[in-house]
Length: 127
Image 1 (cartoon, rainbow, N blue to C red):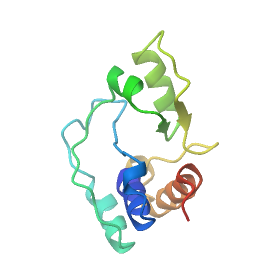
Image 2: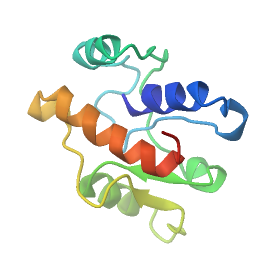
Image 3: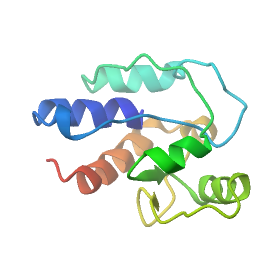
Image 4: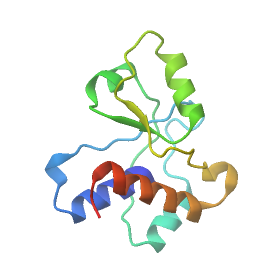
């Protein structure tokens, strides 16, 4: 959801050349999967085009090549630190000061959408 939402906000603001957005998981459970259908439905209801994306796991190259990496909850941060011990994590930040609930577990895609929108508005400095 966050990748599609971010790209939509960037495109709408005419700042496509200023950002490169990607999404990666810290777990391996859904590698290769497309976006979860209820997330697609939520984005469609909001008028946000869904980016064609297959889940992949974050890599060491991501840490080195992306200026900023944002995670949604403390478990993601913990997984990154465990996977890449000894790396510089100065470019890794929480999306919000609180965890963003994973709708896979909560089934509340509306609440997750609101949290992601809040975070992206701050991170991207786009209204």
